[in-house]
Length: 259
Image (cartoon, rainbow, N blue to C red):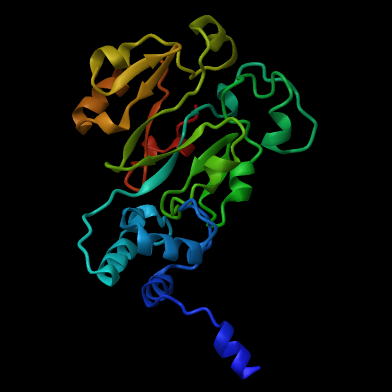
C-alpha cells in the first residue's frame, strides 16, 4: 500500500498550497469557482483573480501577492446593493399571498407585493447568506455591511435580480432604490417610492446617471464626488436614492428609510 500510495500520490504545487493556507476557508463560491481549493489553483495561474475572495478582503489580496512575489494595489471591496427601497408601507394594494413563503415561489404569482419588479420580501437572499449579513426588515431585503463579505450568494438567490454586486469605490455609496421599468402612471399605482422616470438625476449629473426604459441608472464606473451625488439625490422627487455601506449614517440606511 505504501508503494502504491507513493506512485499514485499527486504532488501539490507548493504555491497553491501556500495560497490555500491563507484563504479563510469559507468555500462560499463568491469567487466564481467551486471552493477555496479551486480558487487557490486558479489564482496561482491567473494573478488577476487575486481580488475575487470576498471573505478574505484586502488582507488576503496582499497575502496572495506576497506569496506570488508581486505587488498588488489596493482594491475596492465588492458588495451587494438592493435596487428597491419600498418597505411594507410603501407598497400600494399588494395582492394577498398565502403560498410557500419563498421569493422563488411568489415570483410566479401576479400582483404579489404590488410592484412586479421590487423586493418580494420572503428572504431567499437571507437564507442563502452564510454570514448573517442580509435580512428582510419591514418587507425589504437589507444588507448589514458590517458583516457582509461580498460572496454574492444573495444576488444569485434573488429571482427578480434586484441585488447587484458593485465595487464600493466610496463608502457610503449611493444606490438607485428601484428596478421598475414601467411608466410613471403605473409606478404611482403600486409604489410610493418607485422611480417615475423624471430624469432629474440625469439632468443634474449627466456623467453618472442615465435613463433606461423609464428607470434612472447609476454608472458606478463614472461615480462622482459626494457633493455631486448629493445634488442628484436631492433632486429625486420620490426619495428612492439612498446611501448604503459601513459608513452610512443611520438616517441613510435602507432599514431606517421607511415612513
